[in-house]
Amino acid sequence: MKKLVALVLAMIMALSAVSALAEGVKIAFSQIGQESDWRTANTDSINKWVGEHEGWDYIYDDAQQKQENQIKALRNFITQGVDVIVLTCIVDSGWEEVLKEVNEAEIPLILVDRMPDCMDKIEYYAAFGGDFVEEGRRQVAWAGEYLKSIGRGDEEVCVAIMEGTTGSGAQVGRTEGNLLAMEAYPNLKKVAQQSGNFTRAEGQALMESWLKSIDKIDVLIAQNDDMALGAIDAIKAAGKVPGKDIIIVGCDSVKVAFQAIVDGEMNATIECTPLYGPAVVKAIEDLLAGAEGSKDILHPEEGVYDTDGGIDVGGVVSVKAGDVIDERVY
Ligand code: GYE
Image (cartoon, rainbow, N blue to C red; front, side, top):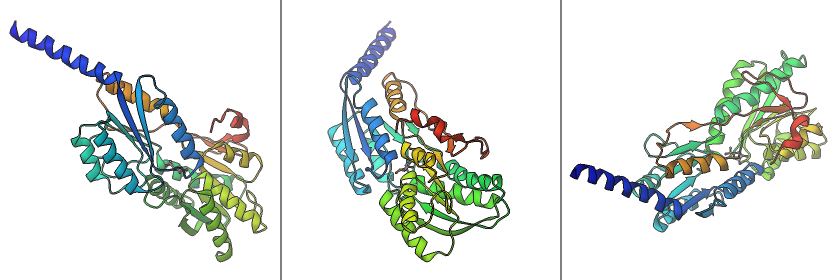
């Protein structure tokens, strides 16, 4: 009898703890900054879904592209006693100490977009992000297959790889995928590889300097669309025709890139979705309901978009950007 009473009491206490949490739940999000259209859409999605969720308090922190600001924000979240932390890591290293502090404070952690490299040493409740290696592989595979489709599969083609923010999961993974795929297309020859930091301005400046210093660039692999769009400006300014003289493959699939493809100035973009708001809300709801978390990184399904569609990059066939531009929300 005593045991039963204790059990019932424990259950009531557990249930009321969950509902107490559900009432004034405080969620904090550490975002890296605002470097790209992708990032804006990502921030908007989480701010809308999590920030406007009924009954939840929400703290948003923009780290202005500085890891030290993110670490400061995380320590502030701990001091404020938030209930859940949502985190995107600007770069992948240097997180173990502060994330262990988060774990010690017993604040559930939800990782979004760029993961830390210490995932095997910390606790987290859920993780959602793009498959960056696969995205990078698709970029180069698209170029290789497209060249084959226009009868240039045996021609030596000069490729420049414009990388994202050095040391970020997105740059590390996409570079790995880019280089991996280059091996499968021996006609592709790498002539440049440098960071444009995921911004339009730096993409433009880097392309300008490449066009002055490198004899021949036939293909630009830009690890995000913002840098591709910056590069397009530089190519035009140099008197060349983007999309024709230089084949341009971006990544993200933001609406402005679809427009550039429709306009004939860009050739393809590999999708990476920024719309994680609903997944984060679902994870928090599961957490509050007492469900077990998961160690897996959940990757959304993503497509490939280009001028005409029909390019098979292995596992996925491209879709004509012009057919879907109107449905694009970011
Ligand atoms: O591709 C880029 C952004 O981490 C997936 O970061 C994200 C990348 C995205 O700035 O545009």
